[in-house]
Amino acid sequence: MIKSLLFCSALLYMGALDVSAQEKEVFTMSLKLTSTVFAHDGEIPSKYTCEGQDSSPPLAWSGVPPGAKTLVLIVDDPDAPDPAAPKMTWVHWVLYNIPANVNALPEAAKQLPAGTLSGLNDWNRTGYGGPCPPIGRHRYFHKLYALDTVLPDLDRPTKAVIEAKMKGHIIAQAELVGTFQKRK
Image 1 (cartoon, one colour):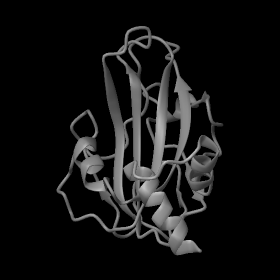
Image 2: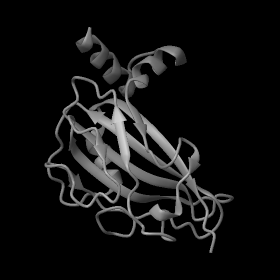
Image 3: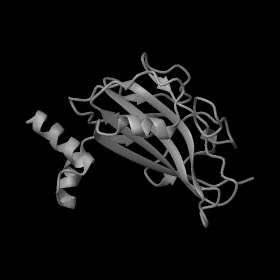
């Protein structure tokens, strides 16, 4: 049963499986991503932004499929620079090869789980860079992917490189969206 679900999930991701929206939901329902400091579509507290400590929020997940070997976390903002006229997606955090048995990252995650590697954000550095929108209220997508493989050490890859390497290996995914607008 589990092998057939994993196989169907892989086919679904590759676009080789023609299923209804309801069936598609069954494959993506198991993996859940949450935070104790903001709800889905809720406001990210200032503490986790450039107006506060610029530290990562606590994140937790459940429902990692049995066939998962690693996880990938990508946090990005598709509303840059202005949500009224977005021109790019700004990458805030890229982590890969998070062990599949890990189920959370603590607030202000500095020490990552053993084996976890970091990619580059759009400040051209590794690590978390919090929301700091120049104008308007932006959306911040926290995307978690369960992979059926361990990715090679890619030496500080960009989000695009990670996404290319993940292709064909995603067996589940989850998303948590937070919003933020500067007050100052």
